[in-house]
Amino acid sequence: MEYVIAKYIRLSLDDKISDSVSIESQRLQLDKFIAELDVPNAAVRVVEFVDNGYSGTNFERPAIAELLELARTGQVNCIAVKDFSRFGRNAIEVGYYIERAFPLYRTRFISVADHFDSAEHEGDTGGIEIAFKFLIHEQYSKDLSRKVKSAKHAKMLRGESVRKNCVYGYRLDKQRKMIIDEPAAEVVRRISAWSAQGETTTAIAKRLYSEHIPTSRERGSENPRCVWTAGQINEILGNEQYLGTYIAGRTRVAEIGSSKIIQVPRSEWVVIPNHHPAIVDKALFDAVQARKKRPPRERRNGVYSAKHQLHGKVFCSCCGRKMEFSDAAIPAFRCTFTRHAEREDCHKLRVPVADIEARVIELISAQNSKHISAVSLEQDIDEYGALYLRFINGELSRDEYLAAKAAVGTVQATAKLKAAENTSAALAVQSVLQMVTDEKRLSADVAGLLVEQIRVSPNREIDVVWTEAFNNMMMEESDNG
Image 1 (cartoon, rainbow, N blue to C red):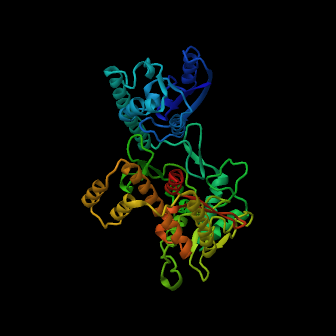
Image 2 (cartoon, rainbow, N blue to C red):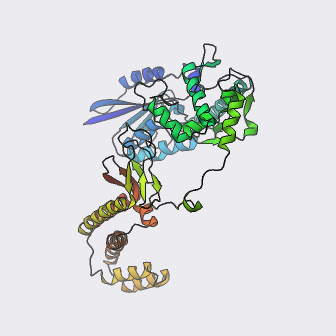
Image 3 (cartoon, one colour):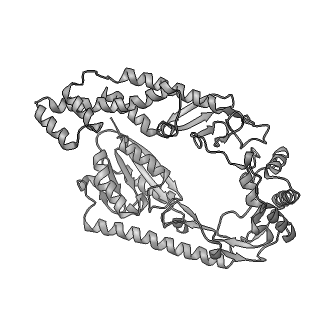
């Protein structure tokens, strides 16, 4: 028998101003505690989970998500943390896991510095003293976040860099002042000149790719793909910082502890002219902006095509990007990310919509066949099943259904009705699959219900990832059958 102890370590961006809660410090403290921990007579295995740079005010953290899933599935016997604040700073969520979830999962929870061991508290959080600690940790996190935010804003007002890296074309010197990074700056100048001369972002991307120039996000990469996008090029063309203007505070988090980023109105930005050396002169910058303001060319017949029902679900398995729908003479999905990158395997990848739909319908039909064999569709549901079907079809009101059920009532009624309900649910699933199989047509509603993602490979092989809801539905009906 194996006893699994998971040590959880968290360090937020704000915590990095102090070494007192460093990752190594937490690790040493937990290792020492676990070495002396009294555990059942079993082989002990220790695993470690680390969230580096994540706030504790919510549970949107990769390592904690993985750990909680292992606990939920019974693969972790004990979780140890330095203190409650490392596990989380939200009093309600931390209390939920300690009082509700972990007892249900049969998972022991230990907070070393707080001298808390759930094995000694039978599912509660240790009384009023521990509850106060929760609240203190939560308020401390909020107060610290406000102070850090205030300090960053003060730096912005002084024109100091508040990010690890600065905009493409510049680098930070030892005093963290923006100075020109000449190789990258020359790329910025060339992009601006080409745009002012009338070249499109697609043409510019082709030039950069053919010259094997790394993208702004590939600085320092050993094997850059050099596939530029229109978004990256437009970001350079419209960035006023290349005029020597300092700009900060364009975005902010929605709320303390949140990972959601929202745009800030321009009137609230911090803007300081003549802050650093310019890369692009104002005449060239203005010429580019004037050209960008021209109305876009209208598509065929001046009308933009409607989105296909699979729009947003079709992905290129080579580059991982969404494929765009084209309403040409033969409607198709195209990989536009590498349309100018001749060396990429998915260059000019184009798959007719008809081929994709046919493959999806083929796989749905296969699921349909499996479903029929896995679920017992009894024809003689008996009078209890017939009553239930009449109720869900609207032929009987709830009161009429309950009255009729009571009138029929026998000792076996409950078991028979449950079997009828399971069979009726199976029929509902079956009807959707059978409709697609018979009509050979994929509606937007059915696609939304069944299909999570469609992956197309460069050799035009098509794979389908079903929605979680559909997978669960199939598993439940198979189990019921």
